[in-house]
Length: 132
Image (cartoon, rainbow, N blue to C red; front, side, top):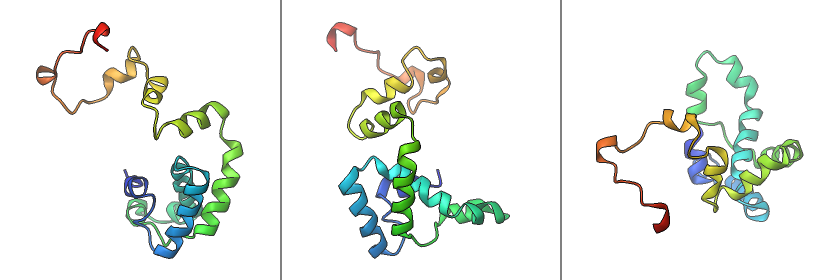
């Protein structure tokens, strides 16, 4: 949950704005799907700080200032290391609702373990397949 604000704002919550704008150049040029990899790159750049602090959650709640050039370089370095099938899911996830099903099909037992926002007694019945 620590990176959620960065994911939701494309790192706009991490100052300074001039660095955010440079990072957005990367995201607009290569695709917004790289936002996730850019956040991984930011975490990698502060890895030693995270491991050295007795309270890493405090550091993770408020990322240090963004270093767009370093994040961009590391993001582009990480890309070839991502397996092709995983990268395909990453590229499609912003616009393709079937990505979730590719990761967790309806019959996957792990799906039953996920909490639902709606209590079972209040859930509407699933529509018949013919109606879809």
